[in-house]
Image (tube, rainbow, N blue to C red):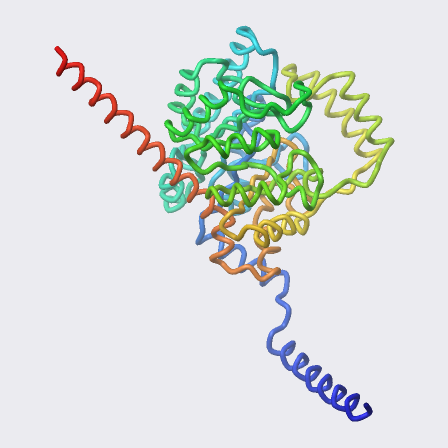
Length: 437
Ligand SMILES: [Zn+2]
């Protein structure tokens, strides 16, 4: 017994000496050396954020995306072109977001008008600052723009509501550059049921019209986005889509139990189909907030008084709501998630599905922003955290853009083969008709 103890002591002594020697030659990297490595990696790889709500900022007359706005101020927003360059973000999917409203012709018309206004604002940005940014319609565009030293602007549409019941609208949006479609938003719509604010008591999943929308996306080459969709809608989409699908801004339910997040089973199913989940930087999707009843009560009263901020167009009214919100936030502050929480969610997807199936969708200007990465100028800090956890450059490159661009390429290939099938069918049919005459 004693000799065993002695042997252990010798052994531990030796291990201790080894650790000492190791720590001398492999020191824990300093913050500044990690930052330098992160910056160098960002200069070599393509970095893509799959979701921001900055187009609503663009509609503000007093705000200019080509100008640098001081980080940390509310009126600055979270994304502008100079800060994208500063933080090392190459490509952004600008979301054309329309909140769910009345499901009828007048509602559809208003939604379309709003969507077109946002699309116009994005095209105006590209026209106004051609030296800073270019429109990206396919992965190669983003890689080319990177080589030219410019930012890439992709377009996604958040909520299929502006399609109304007419698939020609979807085709029109595609022609204007829309390359992903988030099928629904905060509540159920004509396409599918939402993960939140259920109007249908049952989760009805994807509707018959929704199936047509998914097929049209597959045919056009638009990525289908299941963020915001209910669990049943999610599985229905996976079943009917001919191409892999994405979750443009969702996190892991296993780490933060929120219906907007994906369960492990959902993440594996998404991965099995070749898709990708883009971890969202919204604090409440990353970690469960400590109970804060006073804050909740005050926010509920605010919502009851004004409705959703995103639905309100009147700038003076919006300003008043923001001020009241800030007063509540100051009085009853909330413990916010951090860059470490984001990395925990990335680690989780890597663990259960693999490094090929995860990316980042910040939701900046739509509620996104965490301690350590509160706006786009701090985006490289996510890479610092990934380096600290031992991720290689190759893995970081996949997470930051390689994965989503792989899915996008596959979606384009599926679209091309569907179009080829369609034209083969049409020429066969016309040959048959001619043969009969
Ligand atoms: Zn969203």
